[in-house]
Image 1 (cartoon, rainbow, N blue to C red):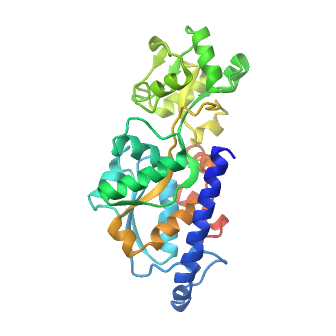
Image 2 (image 1 turned 60 degrees about the vertical axis):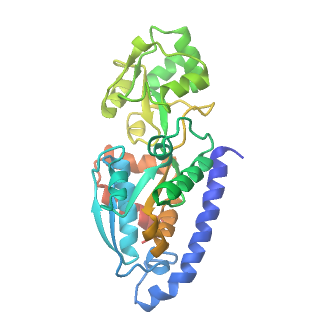
Length: 328
């Protein structure tokens, strides 16, 4: 069983258990309050958060807007009064707002928490072990509770245009490492300000794949929107740093290289809440786990493309997802 299959089995089992428990505890109350569900197994039928006021915060990019809207609309379907604040600065604006009591709930990535917030220099290769380590340490040190993670892994990656793929035949990062060493004058890399130096970025890839990218061929401090266009146009870069669920991968028909030796660390996404709220209303994180469970990399990429490329509103994409999955 590979990493994705193992992760899917563990998440599915956890969510199934949470859903059964929530249905048993809350289903009768929802019915007694006259709540009408749109279909069997919906959030309105299985949960009752009537009278609970919640504040959802989100970072400042499309994926965060979408999953935060999914959470906010699901909580509203359960009867909660939800306030929503977006555009909290990346990477830690939503996290800081949560710790300060300015918001109650926020989605966060396990890799960001493990490396940035919890102070580790070396990531844990197994994505579920890393999630469990984050959840345990963050609860103990900061009183933060993490929901079971959604399956999609929004990690770093390398991409090239289809034309560049046809020229170089790079399928994996191992292929890329060999090509960089054999063709240093062609190996131009577009990257953001932090990727060339951060512990979970290029230095880790060079260590895992045993090569060194010529520093003079790295064009850094680039905005991600510029990076994707630069890859597609092969100007000024042949290779680019990307996020693996970014919708522009589909829009620009980019070829993402397989991380065949596991150099990029995991960035599973979970909902954070402070311990007091999680203890008082555990069903909130049950809902977060349930609505996140169907979202894999392909689905998240498509939803991101709907917003970033097609210009749809995140709240509309979120509502469509919840309806298609039968949650509302």
